[in-house]
Image 1 (tube, rainbow, N blue to C red):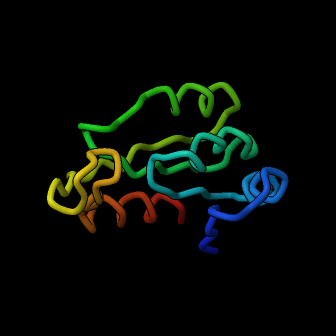
Image 2 (spheres, rainbow, N blue to C red; image 1 turned 180 degrees about the horizontal axis):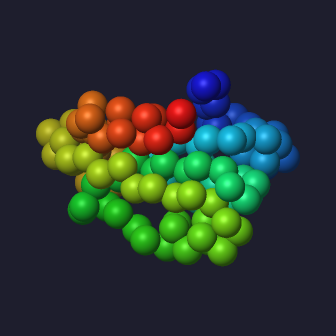
Amino acid sequence: FNCIDCTNLSFAELRNHIESADVILGAQGDPMTHAFLARAGARVGMISCDELRDDRHALPSAIVGQKFTYLIGTLDYESHENLNDCDINLPLDVLANFLGQLI
């Protein structure tokens, strides 16, 4: 795996990383809105929680033939004042299950 910090990437650089990926794993947010650019058959895992889950991400992935999975954690309300900035605590077994499916 490569950890890509999307903060300062141009759209072309981000697209290049996504299009060449076999697996994309990330927290729900702006960079993950481009996950549908990955190739058909790519595995896409989006870390989210019940309070913030947005099912609009799964439909484009399904249309292009990706294998999309929500990895649902719990929201840490005390981590930030703004709900959209709060940390998500993902249980280790949820992550292990997703990674185990890659083998």
